[in-house]
Image 1 (cartoon, helix red, strand yellow):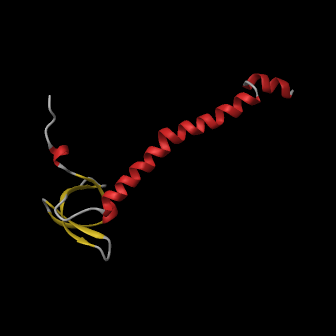
Image 2 (tube, one colour; image 1 turned 180 degrees about the horizontal axis):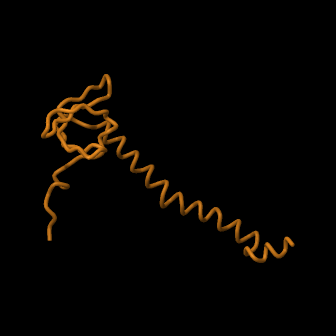
Image 3 (cartoon, rainbow, N blue to C red; image 1 turned 45 degrees about the vertical axis):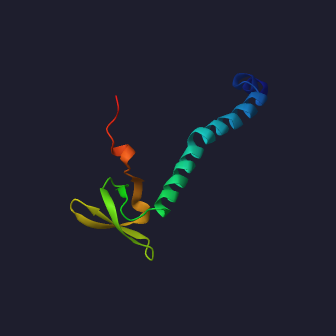
Length: 104
């Protein structure tokens, strides 16, 4: 009975090669890039300066008007007024290269 199962699945050696290969592909194409993005975002959040134009994780665009190091918050000035956010809610910077029109 066991010999039939081994023949149908391709053998023990084949499975021992494919499982680590599949895990390696999963790591290098999914997990590692996500970890690198998180590191970049964390570094960006710690280097935020007053006057930087940013987008929050909820999609609100604005300019940083105040940074409070004591409670880890920033105040963002938007078209509607000033809003206080946690520093971790800042998603990305709106730099000139993102705002510039696309060249044809």
